[in-house]
Length: 323
Ligand SMILES: *Cc1c(COP(=O)(O)O)cnc(C)c1O
Image (cartoon, rainbow, N blue to C red; front, side):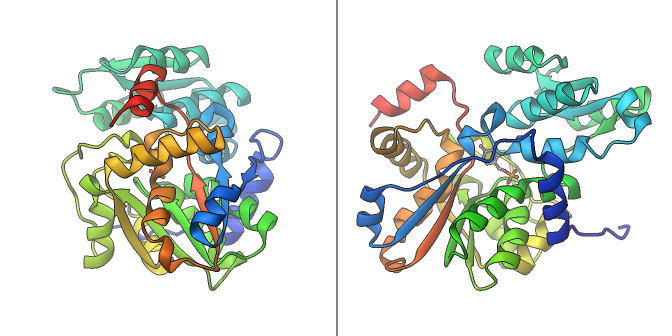
């Protein structure tokens, strides 16, 4: 394997400068009810209010704004059916870069429409017979496009880290931080920011129970691959951590926790009812893990990243009515 250079805190700080004026500085919200329930001070960093509805805009914008003139002229390609697609499409439109997004032909119509709405060209593939990474790589080679992956890229990781940088600059150093974990771009970036701004903060990554490849990897010391997990947390249905994200997580994160889909639904209901927030299932991972261990958190100052709010409205209604 070729040598790689891992991003560091100064890359997160540089990313913050680059995305300023494009990304929102999202609100940090608190809830008296939550503070009383925990006997602690809990700060929610609300990336559901980020542009396009999730933190992924930060990493995409940071990556695309570093393209050379040739890269800008040729364009960007990404493969995703979720928030990364919209993040790349919106960033590309803002920077005047042509974008091609590879999406499964059975992707929700609303997501395809949103991606096209940002001006991107959508290339469909059959998820059962075709390999999207291969299609993405072929497009990149044939048309000279630059491929930006959803998490395993130093500029993406540095961009994602700006959310926790903003959080801790607002709240001061925290004692414990809970971050959702899919492929690890958000967790790795958050860990770089947190280790710099609050060296003693305990950092937890949180995965869906059914897709605990990150926990297995963290505990065994090597990247574990799994089948696409069945969970309502569709933003965390990744099969493995990456060559950039894993070492940063290994070096800086204290542990990886898991929560069940049922706990995610309870949190979605709570956040809607008490805090009037629409949060997608994946966005509830951090809060669900914190609630499960709240007895150990008494008296602490706690940060929770709410990662996104993009959920199909009929599906959301079903979750709120459910159980
Ligand atoms: C992508 C995503 C995640 C997981 O982020 P990774 O960087 O892949 O770990 C979590 N929540 C939401 C809303 C996402 O879109």
